[in-house]
Image 1 (cartoon, rainbow, N blue to C red):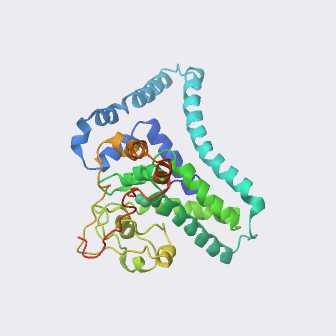
Image 2: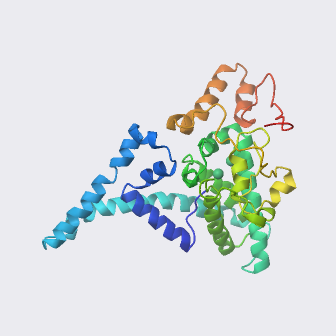
Image 3: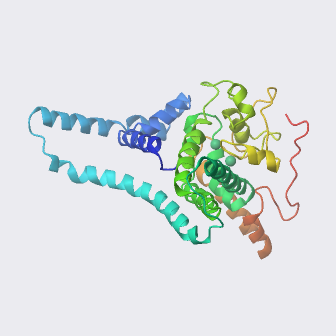
Length: 328
Ligand SMILES: [Zn+2]
Ligand SMILES: [Zn+2]
């Protein structure tokens, strides 16, 4: 998940902005996927030619400057519109965070301050809130519709950290910042924690090509490493629905969802019934599937239960228990 706090986040957001403006973002994601055939698809061709206009625009500006004919007002309105659109997008995300925090502040159970021990407390509370948001994203079907886009890719690489349904950030902010505010986490502590969490949350998607052994030596005994998160993204029965935490996996250990990577069981990424290369299937597939189930079941109580029960629940059979024993 990406949040917009901290210097690193600002720099990373600025870099994203430049890449987005140059039309290079999609191309980087495509090339990063190592799937050269996808360049020949419509999306691939678009990604290939997207940088054309921005690069020509820069040449146009440089040529005008060289000829001494550059006038700022010729470019001012279109470029400011572009920048404004980018800023509005970021403000919507920030506005949700600020609204949740200020609304729930009066109901905070305790008050803390900016000290090292309240920082440790703040990080543990944040991880707890992350666990709740993430667990519910897997166990409540309506929320799975929002979270499943992140699980659709069938290959693990850093571009997966960008794969999110547009409502996931507001949903995550609501739960995580809401719980942290109610449990009195200091706002400055919260901002630093969110910054660290956002950077680590992206890094744990590093692929096997760059980091074959994602356990990071002895670190995997103490923190959540790329190896743990590969397990989380895997659909193998032994791995599914485990490792919900982000950096400190203390809550996975407490709630019994901790799972290490078995060297003999290679993670298979993606979602069982999904075509991970079809964008519409990855983005809207779970919503369509839920709508179908709700429409087809006759009883109103079952229609409602479909929304709040786990993704594989049915009125006839309930929620099947995953057989993790002997699973390969
Ligand atoms: Zn997940
Ligand atoms: Zn992930």
